[in-house]
Image (cartoon, rainbow, N blue to C red; front, top):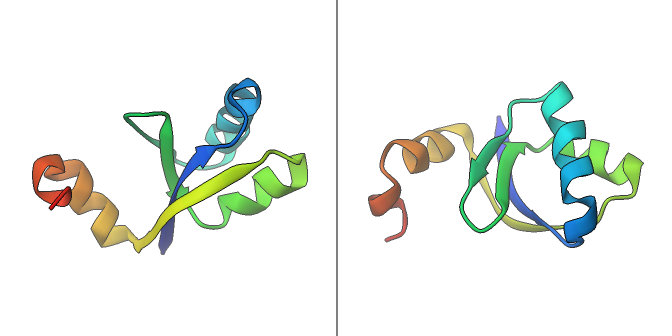
Amino acid sequence: MQMVRIKFADRAKEAQGFVALAKRLKVLCFPNNTYEFAKSGLKILDQLGIAYEVLTEEGFDGACHALRNPAASKV
């Protein structure tokens, strides 16, 4: 499964986007208002017209590694 890490372009729409995603998918929240979820969730944001910036794309294993060992994932 491909995971994406995003940051919402509009802070005013961030809550709406997060709730829409959380109703349908598992969403991981990271510092600096970044969120990670399955790539299929981008369609939800597109349908709602909520702007976002994709920061990274990675496989599910990479996302799990970042959660378990955040200090090492920054290297």
